[in-house]
Amino acid sequence: MPFPFALPTTSSVLLSDFFESATHPSLPLTATTKRSLLKDTLKKHKRLAPREQASHLSTVQNALTEFIPYLLTLNAAVAFSDVDTERVDVGIRRPLEVEWRTTLSATLPGRDPPRLKLVGLHHELAFTLSTLAYVHSLLARSQLRILHDAVVLPAEQRSGAVTAAMKHLLEAHGIHKYVLSLPTVAAARDAPADIQPSTVSALASLALAEASLIFVSKDDPYAAAVADNRNETNKDWMFKAPSIPKVRAHLFARICLAAAEHAGQAQGLLSSGKIDDDLVKYATDLRRTAKCKAIRFLAIDADLGGKTGEALAWLKGARKQLGLTVELEDGKRKGFKGFKQSWQERREDRKIEKGVEWGMDAGRYEEARVLESLEAKWDRENSTINVQVVPPYEPLLASMPTGRECHSPQLWQPRLLDTGTLSQMRGPPDSQEVFRGEEEDSGGEEGGYGTPRPDAVGAFPGTEQHYAGSGTSSSYY
Image 1 (cartoon, rainbow, N blue to C red):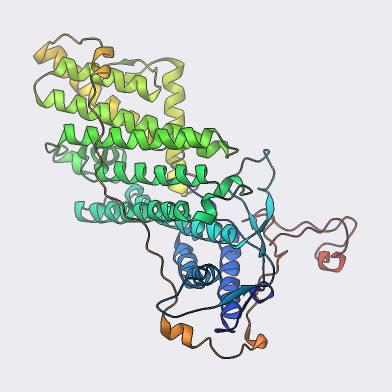
Image 2 (cartoon, helix red, strand yellow; image 1 turned 90 degrees about the horizontal axis):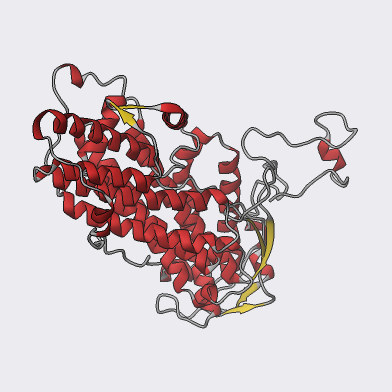
């Protein structure tokens, strides 16, 4: 499952204080209005309850897509580039200064992420585009969340949700790659951890790994069958057995191995920086899950060829790669480790039901259930029908094939302002028409959803605004 990114928030800024245009005087003020709308939207999104945030993502996406063309036009004009065959002259009065609250940087437990003052248009560009990539990853999560609802979806709807999620992840990958292609961003040495080239490259690899695994899960009947068996509302087992069509097991295994390589690259890049531990752990679990899926498909390929003993050996190797040491007896878990794993799986199921912080294990526990289901089935068949020797799994793991890419991701294509829009900004600016936003920079989001603003020490509750100058007030854009 895609990582549940938290969207950053930003401060208010009047772009006309930093930029001026002789050819299009209204451009900086119009860009300020679009940015103020984005600032308000990000603040409102943070204060929403987790279940409401998913439906609000489209609003955030619209605010970003409205502002980004103006930001890219300013960036191109500052670099003396033409915009849609039209010359746009933009001069810099002084370096742009903005504040963004980081969301991926490592922080002490119980503390809010740091608020950083950033100097330069390249930092503004990197944070804004990265936020758009986060939104696409979260939209992919919202599509995949449908698959875990209580209602059993038809095959067409399941395939449609998976395809939509895959497109969002490929879009996020393309945006991260575009950010890396910007010379000013790639060469920045004072960038915070969230937008450092190593972090952006890791996020691009994560998005591609997730898109590759989703490509496989679209045609993976085993994971779908295990999920349906756990669904209490599914009554199909009363009148028919799960339908497991033949799959292109060897091809799927190679695709999963390519996904594991991408996740391994992301893990290495994130481990070397000051990144939040949850993201590093997610990248590690995603690599394990992808490698385990590859081994499982190799086991399915062996079983389809009548080699049940070899298939069981593959499954033992898959469990080892997944980090599972739970022993099975008659298809059931044994000991304290088995009880602990069952408790962790139930905990993840409750998170899915609530829609809060689910998928942080990168699908690791779900894959464990599929492994145990296949192992119990094949072990029963091998004990009663085939009776084949189960060889050691170490030589099998050493003979795994190479990975194979299933996607040909494209670089994100930016959209600058068209000639018609630019022509409207040739007139003199009217500073009274500038929208600075409804949200104040200190605007009540210290702890996000559910956390009230603290009152001043000694003040009557609800009168904190009268003590704005006291040391207890805090500025939070």
